[in-house]
Image (cartoon, rainbow, N blue to C red):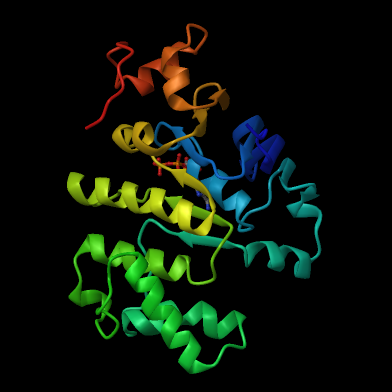
Length: 259
Ligand SMILES: Nc1ncnc2c1ncn2[C@@H]1O[C@H](COP(=O)(O)OP(=O)(O)OP(=O)(O)O)[C@@H](O)[C@H]1O
C-alpha cells in the first residue's frame, strides 16, 4: 500500500480572538483522500479552525501548510490559487435567494473561468445531477426542502472540481435520513472528485460512517486531546477520557454509534 501523502499540515497553531485564546498547540496532519473530522464540544473553536484553514482568519501563531507552503506566509495571488482549489459548504448553505439553482451553481464558473455560457450550462447540469438535483435548474432556493438546498449549495461548492471540500456542520437542520444521504453523497464526491474532505461536526453517526481521520478540540484545556481515526480512538486504551466520553455519548461503552 502507498504511504499516505500529507495534504494539509497544522503546526503549533494558536487561535485567538484578541487576547482570548481559544486553542493552542494544535498539531495534526490531514492526508490526501481523508475524510477528516474536526470534533469537540460546543464553542471549543471548531468553526474557527476551519476559518483558519480556508483563509478567512489568520492564526495567532503557528502554520497551516498546503503541501510544503505555509498558507499564511504566501502572497495574495498564491493564497488565491489555493483557495480556488477549495469548495466550502457553510452551515446555512448560503445560496442567493434571488437566483435559480443554475445561476447559483454557475457563479464560481463565471467568476473564475473563461468558459463559454454553453459550457457553463452543461457543467451546471452535470454538478446538479451529481447531487441528485437533475431537472431543478430553474428552481429558486425557497422552492426546495432544507436537504435539497444543502445539496444545491454542495453543487455550487463542487463547481470548480475542488481538491479540498470543507463542510461546517453539514447535517445541521437535517432529519436523520437526509443526514445519512448526505454522508453517502460526501463519500461519493470524495471518490469522483478525488478530494480531501474536512468536516466540522458532532454527529456521531456521521463520524463513524465516513471519517478516516480527526482532531478533537477541548475547551477546558484549550488544546487538542486526540488525532486519528475516530473508530481507532474509540478502541484505544490510551484515548483521553474526555474524548471517550464524546465518542460514546457519555456512556463510556466502546461501541460504534450508527444512529
Ligand atoms: N468573530 C468572533 N469574535 C470573537 N469571538 C468569537 C468570534 N467567533 C467566535 N467567537 C468565540 O469563539 C469561541 C469558539 O467559536 P467557534 O464558533 O469556533 O466554536 P465551535 O466549536 O465551532 O462552536 P459550535 O459547536 O457551538 O458551533 C466561542 O466562544 C465564540 O463565542
